[in-house]
Image (cartoon, rainbow, N blue to C red):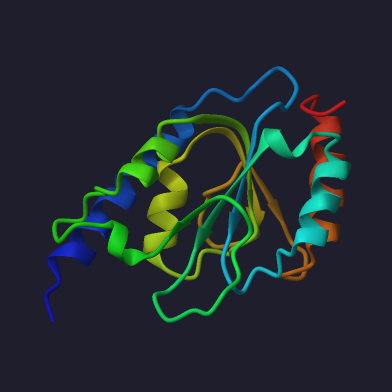
Length: 171
């Protein structure tokens, strides 16, 4: 079945992937972080506090973006929540709250979602961020890909912090 919305989002996502290589990698320390979350990611309040402590940043330096399906019964952490209905029939994002969020800039993106669908992927790629970290996958969507068990947030945070210290983005 031909779906204008899905085809439009897929096309726009491919364009966003191409722009990844044109970004400037930051040279200074991480000050503002966006965390991508979904119901399968295992991000709890306790895990979030661990991530903040690991990066030595306050909660005001973190924004959380949660993507969920309409039927998910997920108790969200604070932050922005989206589902596929934020996209118009032609695949444009029209929700003011989401557009305002996508207008912000971040130093670091921590993707705990493993992007289970193209809606998540498109929203993730729409975020203005200098350095992206996620799980190992078949596409080059991240600057740093970690080959660790999905959902092990503490190991993800520890490994990310270790590599960011090596490349000078974390003190």
